[in-house]
Length: 284
Image (cartoon, rainbow, N blue to C red; front, side, top):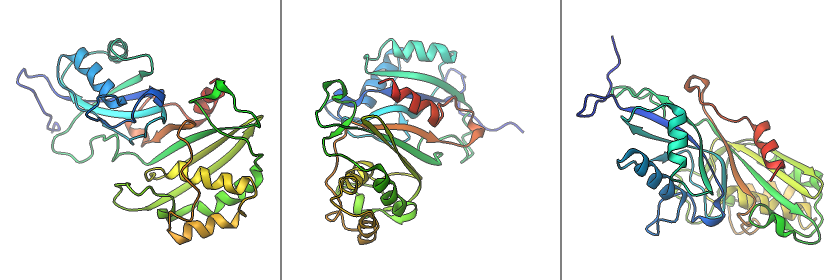
């Protein structure tokens, strides 16, 4: 028996289109649509409307703040337009500004009577962010908007020791912004890596999901430990307190990159792996 599908009035089946979108967040007011129209979602939906001649509403894997970049944001929407993947990529990109570009498109079937359809947010199994930090006595204009900066010397080993206190499933309220709309502050932190490459330090955090400002608040607290202002054990104390006022201030957004969203292999998405995203960042 064939799975039920949705048809438009013209008899053409509606499909679920999944996009990998990359963007420089420096000039945008975050991902989520706003009345100003100056968000990445607004720019993408305008381009989709120009390409399809229809109003398109998108759903993303995870909203990013103003100034935060996306190496591979995942987005889906439903449409009956018949096009090859390369036509979607080139056609939509023709209407996008230089700071936003679709990297790939995957067409998936849409079963109206199944709960097993792909969903950019709810099908996600994990999210990974990179934070790039320029650690040097003098700031570099070459990294403006692309990396955070601190002039104080940082001890990577101390930060690695502090990060171990965050691994596992915890209530991350101590690293949660006051305006966070997540239903629960309990998340599972799968891995935190801290790497130094010359003057650059790269923090990689992989979790089931992240709270509003969670990565930036964790990075700010790790920097406190790296400078010697706090001991590595302090990170565990902050986590256990569930008190945002105890953690370090929210660190700047410039160096934050949404790197990857993990999905089951059955969806066949042509995504970058984490090694590729790190190699990509090394050329910025």
